[in-house]
Image (tube, rainbow, N blue to C red; front, side, top):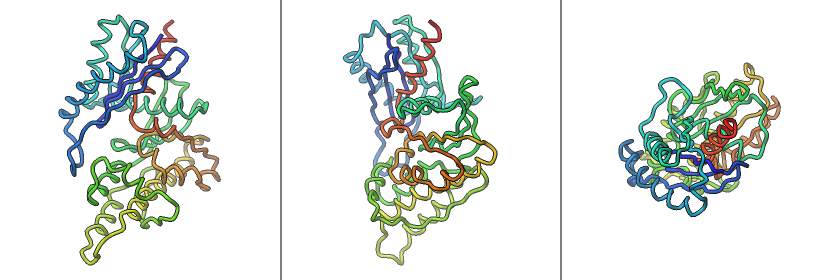
Length: 321
C-alpha cells in the first residue's frame, strides 16, 4: 500500500510516495524556473509550470511504485492551518490530486504546507519529538516560531517569528543586489562556507518573540551601494546575513521560553538547511542554558518537498483502516 504526497509551493513542484511502513519509495522535485535577476515569479506562471512538472514527476513515480497499490493521495492545499490561508499555486496540486482520486478510487487528504514541513522534519530527523514542542519554520515565504501540540490533532499556533520580511526574502534581496540569481540562498551559502570567513556585523532587531529583517536589509543594502568603496566582500556580507538570521532565531526562542516551557525546538524550511544557521543554532550555549535542544530536519528534507505530505496521508490511511 502506498500514499502519494503532492506539494506545489511557490518555487518547487514535489511528488513523493511512502509505503505503509513509512518507507520513502519515491521523492521527486523540480524547481520552478525564475527569470535571471528577478526577485520572484507570478503565481499564474508558477501554476503553469506546476501542471507541466507534475506530469513529468508522475511518469517517474510509476517507475518506482505500482500504481494499483496507491490507496491515498495527500496534498498541500493551503500554506498553514489558519482560517483564510490561501495561495493559488496550491490549486495545481489539489486539482491533480482530485483527478488521480477519480480514477484510482482513492481518498484525498488535504493538509497544510506548513504541517507537511514539520512532518518531514520529524520523519527525517529520526528523533521522537515530545507531544508538545516549539518549531521554527524558516523559508522564503515563512518565518514563524510555532507552538506545536500533537496531542490535539496537530495544533499549530504561531507565537512569533518575523514581523516584516521573511528570512528568505532578506537573503534573496541581498543576493540579487549582489548580482546573484534568484533564489540566492544556496549560492550565498557556498560563498561563505568555511570558518575562516568573518561575517559583517549586522545589528539584530527584536521585539519580544518577533524579529525584524527590514532594518538589517537596509543596513546591508547601504554597504552594497556605498559608492565610496571600490567593492564589497560578498562572502562576508552573505555570512553576516545568515548570522543575523541565526541570532534573531536564537533571541526570539530565548524570549519565548519564558512563556512556553518546551524542551525541544524543531527547525524546518529551506533557510534551516543553511550551514551557518545550523552551526550557530546547533552550538548555541544560550539555548543549552535554558534547556532547549535544537532538532534539525535532514538537509534534503528542510527545503520544499512532498515527503511530509505523503507521511501525513499514510498516517490518515492507517487510522481509517
